[in-house]
Length: 510
Image (cartoon, rainbow, N blue to C red; front, side, top):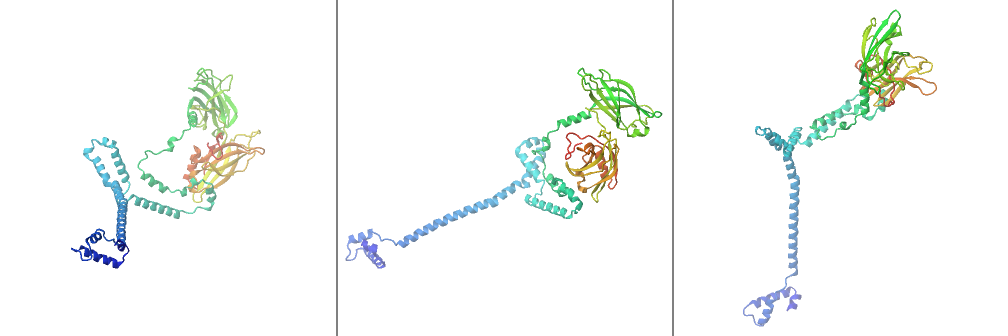
């Protein structure tokens, strides 16, 4: 029977079903004993393999569908958290409504009593900082939109400025080519700096480089020594019209510094009537005193017409028997008619200025400056020099003038005048022209050097002077006067000074 069950087809299956129904009947039909029906009923028929496979496939498909559904639900929840929950949370944290309660609580009358305690709380300071930042922007417009709009406006303004900028003259191209890149002021957008400075409410925590710059101690000491006074000196001036003689009377000195180890000095005074240094007169030496009384007269024969061009130079020294005499200081009186017309004796008090060596009178140069803004043309006219220092053994010099155009410590151009032979008072009347755009006038300066020409060897510098916005004294005043009165020649006398050891043509420091 088991073999029939295992190998039967559809007919066997039908026969088996009939036999099973007959065996279930009570009593069994004829031809079927009880043991056969019982053994047949205890062994159930085998199921169809196709039905078992179909049930397994359905269960696997259900498991796959369930797993995919759970994965989709997890992905949906993650996207919802990233796209909706986080932006809403950030917006809630940065909204003005979150800062207003804190500000209102701080501004309420009940909180005024413990305002100091609340400001010490870190959370309160955080809310205040957020409120300060929010106050610089509009609460209705997001910060990203504001920044994009601001950048668009600034870019549009820059384009407008570039399109409306006038074209520069071709004469200035050579000048601009020599300028450093940082000196092109026409390409600097100053409009960008103002909004950035306004957006930053505080500078706490920023590094300021200017606080870490090391100060020049030597330079400060030199300036303090140059400006400190070394006592006072009293003298008088009178002119004798009959003998055409200037009478200089050295009266006394007061509060001189001590130069000796004993706490005293041995002072005396040298007198010059510049520019003539050949005629040198001096007082007697007064021993061990800081307040000497000289009361000595000195005569300088000079015509009255030449007094306006003369200078009185007094040098105070400390006498040393076995070493070089120490210089205490000096007094230079540029204008002899400063106190009176010299018709009667006039007493004058002057501070003795600190000096380590006698200053040498190198002479003066007269030139004019004229600037044409429309053409961008600067004209320097070298007129003449007077009382130049003799550089040759003959007692004369062969002077010429060299003018250098400087910008940011660099020499861009240089031009020279003709050479005048064997003279200390040359007359030139020569014009030197530089093409400088108006926007670069605040960045340039002129270095005027009076040179002595030598046929053999190097040419020597007699003296220099400088004019420009960064110059000192008369050089700056002359430059500003030229800019204040355009198209008008402005002429002045300038004193020549020595070239310092630290001076270089590319980096002048006068």
